[in-house]
Amino acid sequence: MSSNQLYPVHYRFVDADGVKVFYREAGNPDLPTLLLLHGYPSSSHQFRDLIPLLSDRFHLIAPDLPGFGFTEVPEVRRYTYSFDALGNTLTAFVDALALKRYALYIFDYGAPSGLRLALAYPDRVTGLISQNGNAYLEGLGEAWQPIQQYWAQPTAENRQTVHDNVLNLAGTRWQYLHGVSDETLVAPEGYMLDTLLMERPGNKDIQLDLFLDYANNLTRYPAFQQFFRDRQLPTLVIWGKHDPFFIPPGAEAYQRDNPDAQVELLDTGHFALETHAAYIAQRIKEVIGGHANFMADFAE
Image (cartoon, rainbow, N blue to C red; front, side):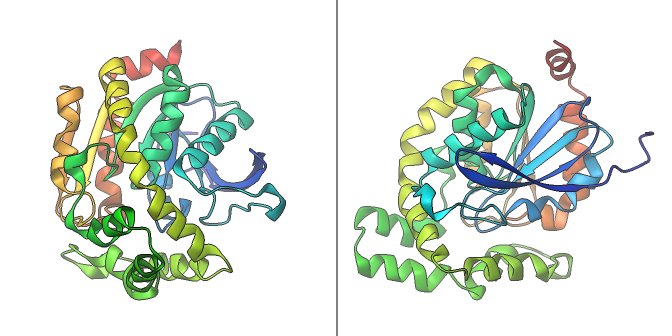
């Protein structure tokens, strides 16, 4: 298939870690694999524009994390919704698909989940794209304040405050539109789908549990940073600079541990793919797909 032709996107399930994981797949499996890891409150749906733009150069896999999208967690699994658990499920997921080499695209919740996968299998990771995927304390913005109060005092009152301010259409829409200069570029089905799926029975409690557990990610930051130092991977850090949750110092900090990391700040918000998918795809092809070490590592 020539480079100007697009591969179709397949929508699949696989059993992993006692979970029926939904994922999107496109591209030639003989090409380098790029594992796309979504964030809150979205799913693999957030990559709907990016996948076709990369399918001529990569084999693309985009799973829905437990608690998100169309992944199904059986009641009998008694799943504990924590970032350790999400990392364990991702580890089982790549094993179920027999993925032995992959670059990682990490965003929002996909960062602490995917970097746990990276720590489990460090030699499998061939490259890194961090799009508002935080791994540094200085990357946490003021929008975290209500959740940080919940970390400090996990009372029923603070849990309810987070519930009322965040877990609704207004809160989700705000995350999509805040900091976006041209809101007509943001498709409303993104935040509408996220809101609809959040209304499933029990899902808001799942999200509140993950908000509380996010504090444990901060204790893992040093291990994530050591991974960056040890591996020195081809790295693209591409960031919506108006993101109120993960602010630009978190992007710039990557160069502290990997001086060759390419860092770019885009004039958009948290969900940069909603406005800049074509540009991000081109930069992935240039920085990751065009990197000699990446291609050599894939060829091993």
